[in-house]
Structure formats: structure tokens, C-alpha cells
Length: 580
Image (cartoon, rainbow, N blue to C red; front, side):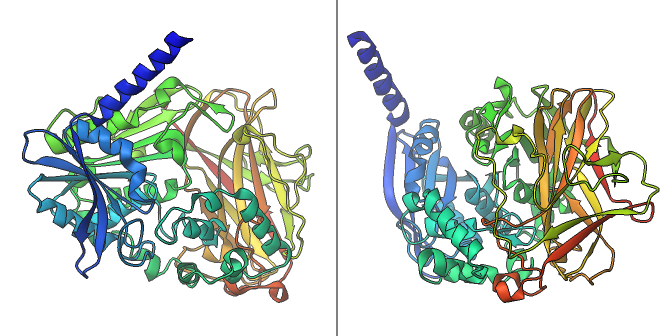
């Protein structure tokens, strides 16, 4: 026992020496902004005879202390590593208003850093989630000393946060409380019982979403109110993104990292795909993409098990080492990371291997198209579902979902840890379901699936969700992906258009999540379509008004009719990947 204790102590001492040897730290260094505000930086430097070094910057709303270990690690490897508190956060001056000044402040910080004697003129940025988004915002302002960025799980403002496909979630306010003021409000942020109880009260008492801040925290939150005053993807949200001309000017090396189960994959891929669409040839060639079987957190700390799914050990990339090799290549003229065998790296689940492509557009070679039908079923029960057929229905038919916003009996969510392999309920309120025949061969599903529905409503607007699963011959279910949409945004998040009651219209769900997995012969696909009556999101009362302002008096029961016939062939297209 005593020997074991001594070994542990020695291991700890050795770890401490590795991460602290020959490192200098300067805390709370003031970096001036153009308007006189000073942002607070913690600076980790190698203690050596070199006069200047390349610099790595993390620009964070989560307070500088979060990155001590990374600072030690990169300083030991010959970099000056800087963590910078955003305006109004941590020890930085000013008022924190998410997104609004991040790009300009990022530019000013890069310019100041580049003028210091200890900077050799080569600066890179890294970080995930919000820290990934601010890299794009900074790059949009084109600081000359910024030589590379590594945006991981980058947030897409107005696309995947604080709303998704036009639908706000309760999490928006929860996160604003987490980042409100100078310090991190971890304990209240993580108190699920508190937030769930408040959400249930909002849901059952029909409190308008605009009053979510008053209900939860007894005061108005000015940022929350600003956000909900822009329900469309208007100029407010668009201004945070690079323009086509900006993308055309980018030619520095970029490494985008996201995951199949990353809630911010839509944002991360928006930046990537817009760059591929508008960028110049050099910029596009220098932009690398990694897609792994990871959650949002897993993009920084990969694990081999997630929600009941299991992946190979090679999926668990050493992210610190990968970042180090990337910066050695882009800031020190070292070798390209060996892992990056081509510009696109993606992980094939079930086969548990990394695959490589030159362009993301080549990720799938074809699609399987299934058409919806229910000639002898009402599509309500898993044991009596509608069909997914590769032939269009010759019968004029339709299925109806009824959604009453005044119905407060919520569908009970799955509470297990194996949520991606949870069984599908036999019956679920507000849901219709369709099942395919068995696959007659092993099939690779690689890319995004697309659902096209011909719909009619008796109300001007409502919200629906589509989800795709696969079930094997033993009845084991696996979640593939889902998409939701406020139907007024069927022609674009910036082009709201209310439905004409009784009129059939087409609605396409271009699911934003890329996936990659190999399915066995005998598997079947399951498509579910459901209304959205959940306490954790903004309730649509179906009146067609600004949903944040709606209340009980605006409520209308929606009848959502899904048409499937030769004239209105509702479908799902599933991407098929290359065999080799």
C-alpha cells in the first residue's frame, strides 16, 4: 500500500514538472481595444533564450482560468499561449453582449499581440463551440498576423444557437445566465431540476416565451430580448458571418473539426461549406475538415462510447497532439499532421475506420429514394405503420397529425444513457411512422438525408420534426438523425411565409447533420414525423403571429396533413456512400 502511494505521488510530481517546467505566466495583462476598453489576458510563455515565438490564442466567454493545462502544454512546446476574456467577462472591462463585438475585439487583440516583442508575427487561434465561432468572426475582420485557425464545433448564430431552424429553445436563457456577469455561474447553469421546473411551469401555464426571462430569473435579460426580437434569420444574424467576398479573400490554413452528434455541426458546416462555395482555389485547398463520431463535448474530448453506441479506439483522437502538429506545420514550417491524409477525414461507424476524401461533395455517390404511403394503415402505430416504398403510391392518400398547443400532457422523454439506441415507442402522441422493407445488401449511409413532404394545414403555421432510425433483424434500433422546422420558414430562414389553410405546399427538410455508417443486410429504415409540443422549446400556438408573443388566447389546434400520392409524392432520400 505504501509503495503504491509513493508511485502515485511520484507520478503526480512528474506530471507537474512536465507541465510547469521552464514556463512563465503573466496574469491579467490588459489588451486595449479601439474604444478604450481593456480585455484581460493570461499569457503563458516558454522560459528560454528565444526572443520571440509564435502565438496561440483562445478567445473565450468562459473565463481565462479554464485553459491553464493547455497553456502549460503549448508553452512547454515552444509557443506563447494566450487566453483572452471576452469583453465584460472575467477580468475584462465593458459589457458582455454575445456575438456583437467579438469580431472587432478579436481583430484588435491580434493586432496588439502582433506588435509585442515576444511575438514573431505568426498567430493562430483554437477553441471549441463559442471559441470556435469567434475565430471566424475575427477572421472576417482580416487581421494580417492571423496565420491559421482551428475552429472546433463552431456555433452558428441564428442557425443552431440560440434557435434552430427558427425555433428558440429554453437553453438560450440558461446559457445567458451561465455567461452573465463577470464570473461563471456553473452551479445554477447545471441545476437541471431548477430549469426543468421553470420550463414545466411555462409549458403548463401557457406563459409567453417573451417572458421566459421573467419567469426563470425574475428580471428582463436585454440580450434575450434582443434575440427574440429577431425571429427571422435577418441582417442581425447574417452580420456575424463572413460574406461571400470575405470567404473569397481567405487563403490561410484552416482546420474545421465537428462531430456527427455535435449540436453545432450545422454552424460548423455552414462556415466550411460557404468557404467551399465562395472561396478562392488556394483557400479551399488549405481548408481541412474532420468529421468524427462525437458529441459537442466529444469534439474536444473524444470517447469511444456515446448514448449506447460504441466506436473503435482509433476514433478517440489525441486532440492536443493533433493541434500541436497542426500549429507546428502552419506556424513553424514543420510537417503536416500525419492524420490528415486528405482534405476531408470522416469516420465510418460500424466499420470503425477513418476514410478520406478530397472534397466533401464526394462523400456519397447516390441516394436511395423511398416514397411514403399508407394504403391500409393510419400510420400511428409502430406495429401497424405506413410504408417507405421505392415506388410512388398510386393511391390518393394522406395521414393527419393533430397538435393542440393547450394539451399540456407532455410526451415522456427517454431517461436512459443509451438514448441513441433506445427502442421506439409503439405509439406516441402527435406522431406518424413509416417503415421500409429489409435492405438486400450491406449499405453505407454517408452524408445527409433529405425529407420532402407535401403538406396542408388548417392553420397558418406550426412546427414539425422528422427523424430517421434503422432497426436490425433482432429489433435493435439505432438513431441516424433528425431535423425540425417552423413551417413558415420552409422557403428559407430569412423568408417567412405563412401557409394558406387548406392549400397543399411542399416542404423540404435538408437535414443539417452529416453522418457515416455501414448497415447490414436485413436492416430496415424507420421515418417518424411528429408535431412539437415540448416544454424545453418555444411553444408554437399556430396563430401565425410572432411566436415569442403568442399566449393561450392565440392557440389554434393544428391538423397537419401529410399527402402521399403520384401527384404529391412525399419522400425521403438517403445518401449512399462508396464501397471503397
